[in-house]
Length: 255
Image 1 (tube, rainbow, N blue to C red):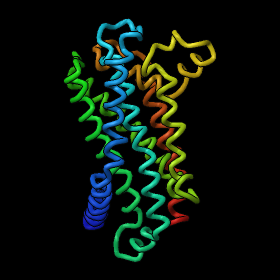
Image 2 (cartoon, rainbow, N blue to C red; image 1 turned 120 degrees about the vertical axis):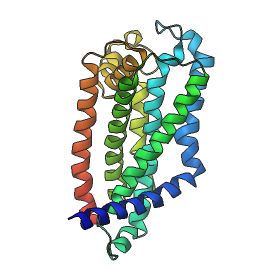
Image 3 (cartoon, one colour; image 1 turned 30 degrees about the horizontal axis):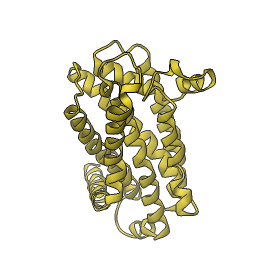
Image 4 (cartoon, helix red, strand yellow; image 1 turned 45 degrees about the horizontal axis):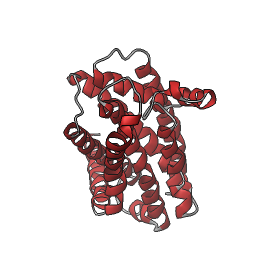
């Protein structure tokens, strides 16, 4: 049993290294996942921030949770694209003809999404600190923020896996990213929802990203989190479990 476990972990490690090399060699991925969220943060804080009333003197503190979620959302299209490319090139069939664990290649993509987003989010937080972001959050609060972001990443990654494994074209594989990009813009990420028209406000307050933004914002500001964190975790866990089940079903058919 131990030998099988080590064999499986070793295979996943090799696949993780393979996928990470693809990410680090893709300037387009680095720009979209890290540079663009930083550019948005600079734009909103230094150009638009003065005109946005959030009830706080430090707009970057209000904005950072939404920027972190946008960075994760931006990465999803690349997960789907790389899985689609592997399917089209017969990479999975080639791996399956070798003495390696059958699902190791798929898990390599999933773990790569998690690792690359950890790096991206860390860089964005460091830039936010240079822009004046300050947080009284302790270690446990930061760990809770990391847990929410990790679950959000895994949930979206499994959704992207479904698209990447089942799409018929590159455009189809990448299309999954567009509605996900839209969600942070209609949430409390940039402005309070109370300033929105009634219909838009109802959508913003009841879509999955708003409780995640509010929970992360409360944790980083040292405020009581309330029920928002449980709602955020419920959304992440629900999406992740459903998407995982569908993705594995598609993978078994295609790979």
